[in-house]
Every structure is written in structure tokens, then in C-alpha cells.
Length: 334
Image (cartoon, rainbow, N blue to C red; front, top):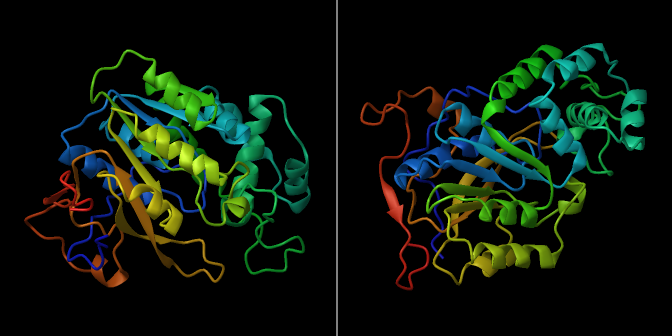
């Protein structure tokens, strides 16, 4: 397998025009520019962009906001997250009012953690509260409040609960409500089957799939994959004719699972920021697709020194102008 390392040019980090209100482990906001370039290289403007693992929905929001896709469909198994997006797109001002009035304390964190809620509104509030007050935004039961239960840390439970920022992001997302086709509380199979049953022509749908990490999934998610789930997703993707792109952590079993077909994988450098010591940790994202073209220069994030350098005049937006074709004649990784 050819591993892409130290490319000469990074993909530019565009000025983010819209950000998800939710914090997520390994959030994919930085992949939005990469997916946008994938669409450009393959001459795609999907009528429907589908995220069967919605999570923070960062990629969908950015592409929709930039008018690179016509509409978005979201599927999410976690009822807290599903309810959050339903309320964002149906009654955002109610949610903002509740956020503005709630006291950010460890006692309230324990309340939201301990209780199950029946209404979408209550689940939406629990989701945003726990997401913004738990370490790294993790909703899984093993996660604790930022600053710990004793709040003796330098960082307190409310350090990520900036009301003005959350409200702004909710309102930004809510403006896109007319272009959200559906938000379903469902696993990825239901979402794929629902869209496949719709009347879309070839290349009119684009699936972006960001399944739970292979490693440490139990610690990061309330709903995670077992071994069979990874295999079932692979088998389902092999039968899909519409364009799709899959992002994973590059665990050896995933590399082995996808390496015998002509659809990838390729590595994409990425920096996460969920390190316990506050430093950014360099990691890699695994990109797998059935599309013929991927950006050649795949480093998504620049160092501080690189951001001080001027952008090349030949590429004003910093996006890669070259493309790498995935060969179909036995050379799997081009």
C-alpha cells in the first residue's frame, strides 16, 4: 500500500463559515474542505448529501452552507443527538432560551447524565448540555465533566459552554432547515435503505460515512461498532452504485478489510485536538471511496509557521489542483 506522507502542499483551511454546535471526538470539520475538493474533482453537485452517522454533522453543514450540495439527509442512532438536530431545525429559539437560562454545574451534569428523557426537546437540551460540559464532548457513560467532579482543575465545567457561541452556531444551522430532507433516529442500514428507495438518478446522491472509530470505540460513543458491524458496513458499501466516501481511523483490521478492492484506501493527515495535555496530536484519517479521483495533496492542516507563509498565486484558495486517479487494473492504490 502506498502511504501518502509529507505532501508538498497542504489543502487550505478555508475560513469556516459555519460550525457545528456539537463538539465531537475526532470531529470531521477539517474534512469539509477535503470532501468539497473530492466533489469538484469528480464533477459532482449532489442533489442529496447523506450522512448515515450524523454526529456533529460538520461536513454536511459546511457543504450545504457553501451550496455545494442541494439537500442533506441525516441518520443517527443516538437518540440524544437525533433529537438535538430535530430541535435545531424545528424550534431553535426554544433551545437557545433554555441554554441561556440553565445553570452549568456538576449537579446539573449529573442530572442530565442520570436521566432518560422522552421528548425531543428534553433530549436535545440534555445532548447540548452534556456535549459542551463533558471531556472532549464525549457522551459515553464513562466520560466525566470537564474539570472533574471536584472542579479543582484549571478548566471548569463551563469553559466550553459559551452561550453566545452556541446560540450563534444553532442559528446558523437552523437557517438551512428548508434544505434538510430528513433527520432519522436510525442506524446506518435504515438510512442507506431509505435513500436507495428514493427516486434519484445516477450520481445524484453522495454518501459520506464516518462510522465509529475502530479503536477505543467503547470509550467514545454511546453506540459503537462490534467486529461484525464493520464487516456489514463493508459488504453494504460494495453494493452501492452511487458515489460514496468513507472516513475511518487507520486500524490494521480496517486496512485489511478494504485493501483488496479498487476503491482505496488512502491516508489523509489530520490533527486532532483531544489530547489530555492540551496539545494537538497528529493522527491520520483513512479515506476510502468508489470515486475515481481524490486530491493528490492531502495534508488538511497547516502548522503555525505555514499559516504565516503566503498562499501560492497559482492556487488562490489553497486547494489542490492536481488529482490522483485510483487505478482499476490491479494497482489498488494508484
